[in-house]
Image (cartoon, rainbow, N blue to C red; front, top):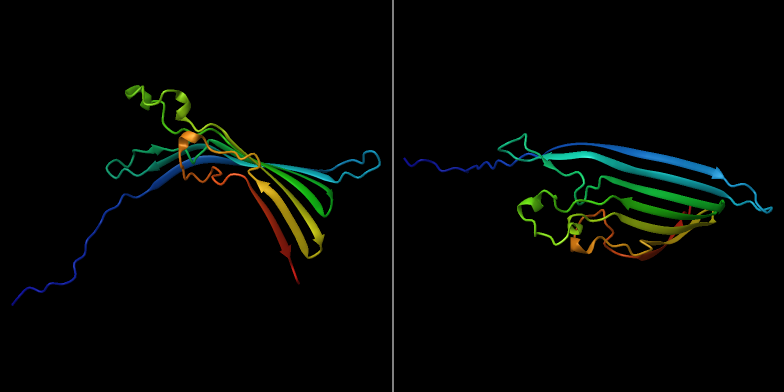
Length: 190
């Protein structure tokens, strides 16, 4: 009798990912009706700010030493502080002008401690971080009728780009598309 040969199974052990972090989300809002000035009603004004303060972010992926962590706070894609400020002025109920300011703190590309082993890795320390990043968006919303709203605006109005030394980064927290315009209609037939 020959031994039977059946299906074979293989087991691939992969490191598990454990993530440990701490952050604080924050939000503040203010809205007021503007006073009449020169006999004219100037509408309403609102401002909101919301964001995140990343305190720490550690990934544990070393299967040989589960207590070994990779620290990611303040690295590209994980800014220490990021916020969005939105200012809206509505001179009448059917018209509103909005300015959005998206800001994020500079992020570390390479740890400065790595320069100890290879001090001429970069000519200047400038290339160790991304630098702060700001993006400004402007839009207008007009409720033309009860069932029709028109929006138009510009995203990344000042064509902000990430630091050139990042190359073709895929970090999605930077605007990689440059200045762009939009127009939208929202029609509700019922």
